[in-house]
Structures are given as C-alpha cells and as structure tokens.
Length: 150
Image (cartoon, rainbow, N blue to C red; front, side, top):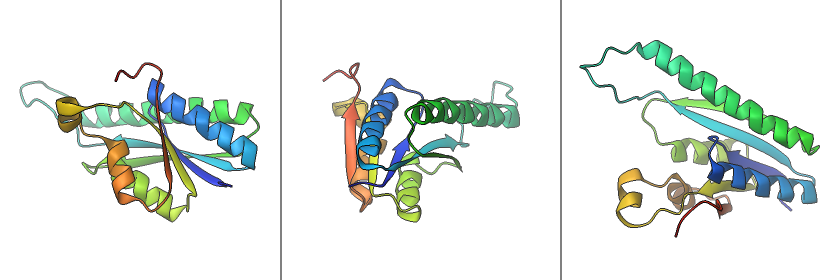
C-alpha cells in the first residue's frame, strides 16, 4: 500500500479531483498526505505598467497558504494525517519541484489532477503532469476533473 502520498494543489477543480482520490487511497491504506503548492516568483511584468513586485509576490504566497489551508482542512476532516508545504521558485517549473519533493520526502505515490490538454493548447501552456511523469521514479496517478474536456 501507499503510505506517503504527495498531492500538488493549486485550488483548481483538477487539483481537487486529485486530492479526493488521494484521500481515498490514504484512508484505505492508513497513509499520510503531503500537500504541496508551488509559488512561481518569476512573474511576467509589463514594463509600461507600474507594479509593486514584492506586494505581488506576497499576494501569491498568501494565496498559496490559503489554498494549502483549505485543502488541509478537507484532509483533516477525513481523519487522515496531513502535512503541508509551500514551495517557491524563480522560474523553475512546478513539475521539477514536485519531482524533487517526491524524492526528498520520500513519496510512495504522486496523485495529481490534469487538465487533459491536447494539441496546441498543451504545447503552449505546457503540462506539469506530463513532466512529472517523465522525470519521477515515483508512481503517478493522474485524474482529470469532471470539467476537463476531451
């Protein structure tokens, strides 16, 4: 059974779907869930628009903390042991940090939602789920949200 289950969360419907499945697995096998949220500090800023960079980064951090707290409350309500981790990066892909965290913890399973993008949308927007699968040695379970379109 999977004892250490890593779950990236970002507040989206796809992440929620991944969290729900991770809780089912953890509950059935007596596992622990570690929730991870990645804050990317490399924000594309239009030089013509005045922006307070530090305030924007702090807002991203606070949003990440709120996302983790909400997900943590959901897991705790199910009586499942849970840990949270806010990771920050300056331009490194979230997938790379997820893979690193899975190895460091160590995770037995990564459960994450995927948008199921195809074609040009996948090429342009990228796919953290795909990169996680390609670079981790940990088993990965991907779930599409009910809202994801084929």
